[in-house]
Amino acid sequence: MTTERQHPPAVAGVGGALPSRTGASPRVSLKGIVKTFGSHQALRGVDLDIYPGECLGLVGDNAAGKSTLTKIISGTYIPDGGTITLEGEEVRFSGPADARNRQIEMVFQDLSLCDHIDVVGNLFLGREISRGPFLDTKTMLAEARKMLDALEIRIPRLTGKVAQLSGGQRQAIAIARAASFNPKVLIMDEPTSALAVAEVEAVLALINRVKAKGVSVILITHRLQDLFRVCDRIAVMYEGTKVAEREIGKTNLEDLVKLIVGEGAKQ
Image 1 (spheres, helix red, strand yellow):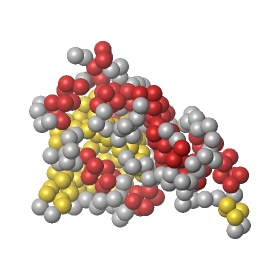
Image 2 (image 1 turned 45 degrees about the horizontal axis):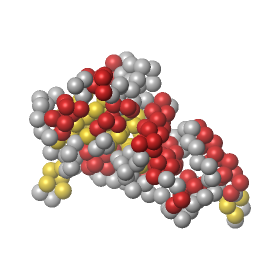
Image 3 (image 1 turned 90 degrees about the vertical axis):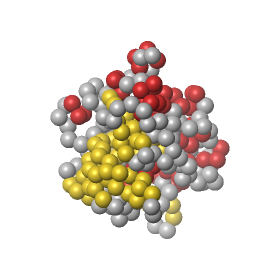
Image 4 (image 1 turned 30 degrees about the vertical axis):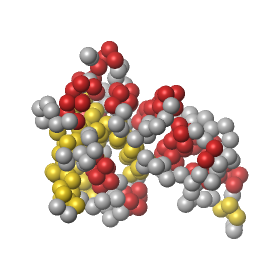
């Protein structure tokens, strides 16, 4: 089984070459990241680089450490050891707001959308535009259309409640909201889970468009086939350790599965 036959790899990076091979510096560099919860060591000295304009797939079995790692990058957890460097500057986030101020966004699996608020309200939740004491709904509607058009997202009625949208449309709204903050890093947790085939295709295309804007995307997914549609590299976690990195054109499903379950060389 070959990758090329079953899963044509996405074009790597913005210009067609891996950033790590063009001499680009990492946007985010993790060195020796350690995290312990009680007696459980969730991360054991993880090193990882993420480059501008690439999608890095982060995979592993349950409790492998991938969620803990991304929560450290997004400021939810504070590491017990190691360093985080953002564009050459060592940083230490005190919480998610601190990471967001440094243009790191995360789209969680539950999306964090308000079902009974319309699309516009969800896009501007917490940063509403006002004119005097009143919401400037006209401006927010116009800006929401621009926001969605920039990512080629088609939502017929922006004043309709989010609860009325399909799973794929809801996912698109969550991604658009995160992308509207002009992130340098966008982390996505299982964005294609429980979606119909057509909606999966739409979300993957959206990820590629976000990546093409120079955003560093980190994708957590159990749908390994999706990795070959959007990712440039894949990092495999096992029992709190990064056991392997693979360029997308130099791996296949069989290789990844072996690494995920703890087989194969550590490299």
